[in-house]
Length: 249
Image (cartoon, rainbow, N blue to C red):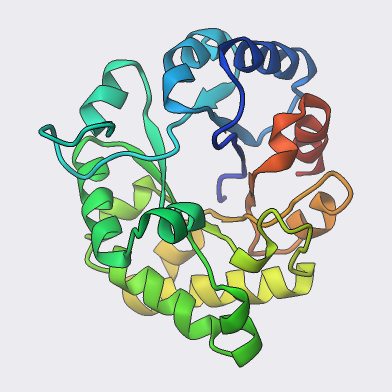
């Protein structure tokens, strides 16, 4: 049975006191669920968040990391640094990293390899922009992103991979892919993995949906057979909304 996961990407939000307050509320409101719950605070609050969540079922993960082990990369954070404070998972390939910081498939493949060399779990993000969707090129874009960044991996590496499909046009816009559109793409993603690695691995990989998931649409999206949870942005910054989404799965 595939893992069900609800992960909150807090992006560049919440100072230390807000981070601690939100985690306190989440621990109070966290429903009894079989789903795994993750949150990704900003780098400066990772260790305090890890400490605050230690006695709960909430896993604290990183929003990003560098591909190098160490060196003259001012402002960057390495996998070893993350591991040294107890962080065992990282988000890679988020659309904002691709758009604002020029991260391409080749760079992300290097980050993936580095994370795996440290036995870190990866939430790998990918997805098409609005022009791709309108032109009917969305399947080609998604297939290319997957193949370029992940299809060099050995089969056993997929035990450390969680996928997060993000239609870029539905992130922070209030727009959401319909549950049918989400299912259609998630099914395509699973078939694409099966074509390279076989159906057993494809059926084992959790594929999350990321794109303006909210309490009022989460249940319908999560009900689709190939949607295994969500990577949640804005709604994860409010304990009540995030816990409502967790209950939906």
